[in-house]
Image 1 (cartoon, rainbow, N blue to C red):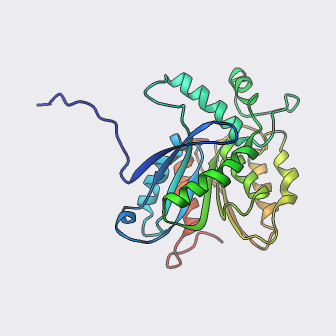
Image 2 (image 1 turned 180 degrees about the vertical axis):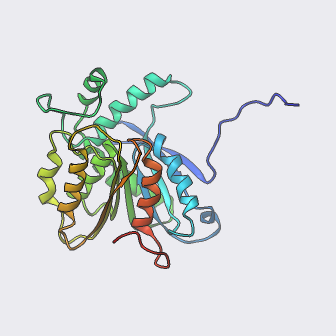
Image 3 (image 1 turned 180 degrees about the horizontal axis):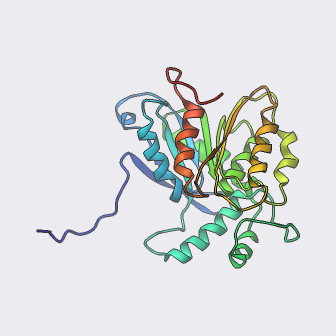
Length: 286
């Protein structure tokens, strides 16, 4: 026998949300924050893991951290999302279209040039609507460094050890941040990056990569991804070029039979272990 019980939204334990407005452009963002169960009962400080695209990645990341709790140190997880993507108020089509515009604006480092060849979407109409807003990753990075991180460090007990996770547009963004702003984060989990954007312009900025600042960078994708004919070649090239730095620990991995989105859970599990695995466990790095 069933009872008629009013439906309640599902919540993730030990999580909080905050609204924060970018003072430069007045855009409102939503921060999703998850902290270890022990956070409320101890006085410890914790490293932080930041991710873009939290509507997709944040629940996977929180779940993975619980599964890896004996293998990697506890951490505070922060998802940097957009405040105008309310699931209650927007239908799926509107929400997804708006999210793509936000992602192109915040995560793509350069304005899309229509003269360049391949991009990402097979849907040219969606591509046209999305990429015309692109090219503001520098402003988004400044917002993270000057407003988001100080807010998190003021609100929570944190250590000065930060990881950045990005997928697709976010993978390109995380790689660009590593090259151009290497002091903000120390670790990078780069999933299925669209290095072909703007005809591989990211490779023109490899020379910016610091030879003196330590960094750990995990790169990966699924074997079934087919956005661009040089997708895997670009991934290997980026890995090969950054590993020449004596201060960089890096690894590239391809997950068999996985696609652009299905690779994310594997990437998070393997990537977090590569970046943060405790000394008593076998390291995944060669």
